[in-house]
Amino acid sequence: LEFRRVLFRSQAAGRTELAGGHVDGPSHIWVDGGSIEGGGEIASHVFSGGDIKPGSTLGRIAITGGYTNAPLSRSYFQLGGLAAGTNYDQIVATGLVSVGGELNIDLVNGFEPGGADAFVLVSGASRVGTYSATNPPSGFAADVRYTPTNVTLRMIKTGVPEPKITKQPQSLTVNKGE
Image (cartoon, rainbow, N blue to C red; front, side):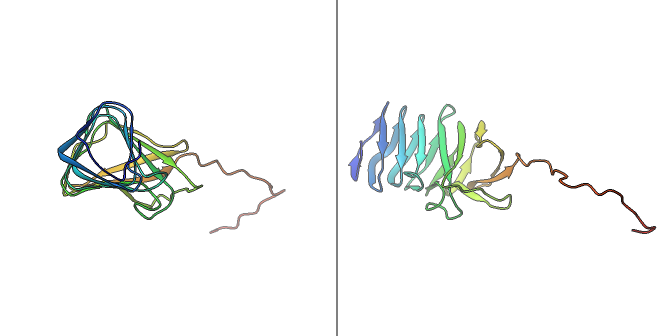
């Protein structure tokens, strides 16, 4: 389903594609199954027991209210550059953010992050909880940091090949002090 502006309360299965639209809900929206995908706005507290995938390849879900990930939920974020909501996926809430479940990271558009690059994946007025598992792309380890208001990710390259000696000298002289 693709929505531009809709009012709903719960979802047990299937896929809700935000497609840049705005979703109005009662005080809480429950996603017990299925997924919320794409970029757009949700005016309600969001409880996710399913999958959440910000962006339609890359984008931001802006939540007016809080955001809760259930212990069995899965969050999928794509990194394709350094600009939040444009080059990498992000969830921004105005209320309490409670994270849990699985954090899955994928690289897109040939992007390869440097070790100093930081990605604020989730932010809110305050944050509690941690992800129970983190699944980075092959060749990388994830350094997930939790602050009182956000979840920040740094990617550490692990698949660095050992240097190869391509030409070995016939002899080597080392002088004293060198």
